[in-house]
Image (tube, rainbow, N blue to C red; front, top):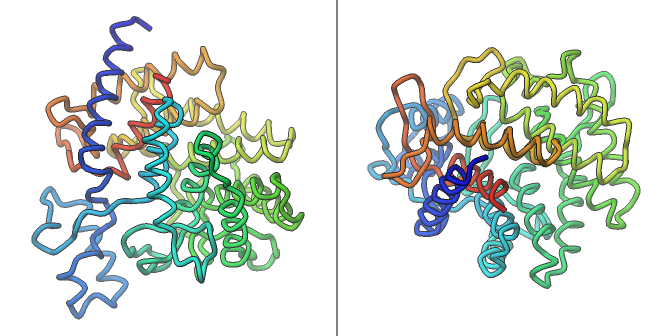
Length: 382
């Protein structure tokens, strides 16, 4: 790729990093509506349907209601986790250290959940379950743990208590059995049995990591069971639905990327060559379905939905793990060029949240949008 394009990537990365740093990695989130002080005082706050409607209002409206409804900016552990790993790869040890220290201070109630559990800084309502503020979830825990583990060697930090603590949390709180078969998988949050494949496999990665570092064989057995559950759910063409509930049967780009990335990491830890075939089949499906010739990454497998920066970023991140370096650079450059063309605003020093035709939503979401693009750019540049 021409040096002028690399210079454009560097300029974009520097501007975006500076904007995130100026915001202290804090801001709004597409799912923070239930932090509203106004809504919390209303008679509807205890009703699941009302909570869902309130969240969707914030997500879909062209107007930002946060200031008038009392939703304060928050910092998400996923944002800090990706920042820490991006800085670590770039050799910026002090910035990485500060992000990891903030991460460790954000753990959910150690007295209840142990040394390695993280959640989101807002309550949220899914169709299948409600998650109160302070509840850890498998995704935030996995990304935070990966940052602590990967950055620890450069920070003189012993990750062992955090790794084993995360595995204990998963094993104690999130193991579910499928009705009728007894097959085991890992839930997204405590108290729910909703089966979501990317959450299941990131939980398997936590257990596999802990087992590889000397944890009990039971942790590896749980990881193997969870992996097998999702491998059996892969369709003949290589795809995965988001989950198994009737309202989770779609297939989208970034969740497919999460599944493949987690499978690759699990295969490496567990040294399971038999996983190569499903990963290769899934990767072929992912690239053929979600990477257009012009570099655009569509939202859903049928090509519908908005352009979302998360899809572009995760394509780069997933292929960084799965593709040979030279081939990856070519694909990454195509995707990043499209992301900048379609969603970047130099005036705002930020990527748009979503684009639907001519309508562009430029809400500044550190966790959902900006940090993923910073990380993807950082992978290509460093």
